[in-house]
Length: 332
Image (tube, rainbow, N blue to C red; front, top):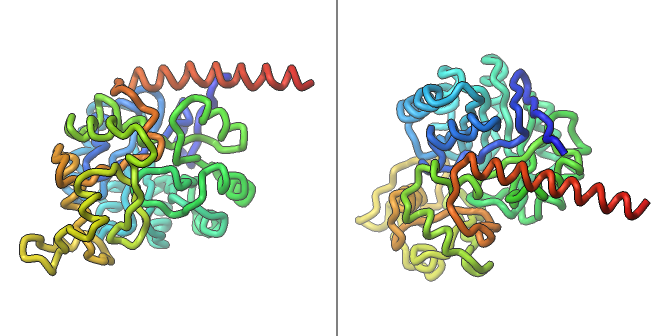
């Protein structure tokens, strides 16, 4: 099986693979450019940045690749509008957003002729996004890392959403191997989004200790779902910080004099400062950091280059497709 190309609006890429835009400073220019150079869509995670920093990373990525570069921005962040407009001004190829729903971004992207892909988890929101002018959408199941918009697995929500819209659907959440890609493409998806596998790559900008912390997650109980200050479930490695959070022993911004509120979110429950915790993790603080990762991190055993990851995926796709053909031949 040869993977089809992926067309999103006016953008076409050789491989139907979108790299997840992981905040805070996990997926920056080096990772995005490496994925783009291999034929996928490389994505910079903009949440947690100010616009000038995002501009810097977009320009750096452009120096490293002539492939397709996108930006992922959480609707929940206070600087959402400024970050979107900065990305548009820098002429990124695609904009992706989740953790909320903004009507304005459809208009901004349409006027700039930039394809916009919202992250959705239900057929109702998918139809709404198509009506507002989405060029495609990322359908994310509960297996994903970070903020979760559903408690249902990807394969349970994907078929109904595919049938509900006419625009490209990108499957996300628990996509780890070539066999996963074959499965969702066979179901009618146009492509996949993968975050966790690319997070554990050499090109990922997280500290070595971040990657080692995630690699040590080997059992289901090593990954927990907690509550994010934005009011959504959030998946992360079971770390000393997560343990303290679950026990109610984490300082609260605005209530504890040692923790200032950085006012980074539009609405925040102030049960802890997520931006501080994510930044500490990215810098390698294993005691006080929050390490967000997908459910299937427990299956990853080594850190590879993006080239090696893509090469393995393509090999697995061929093997999985051959297996499907063999089964069909035997049944007939």
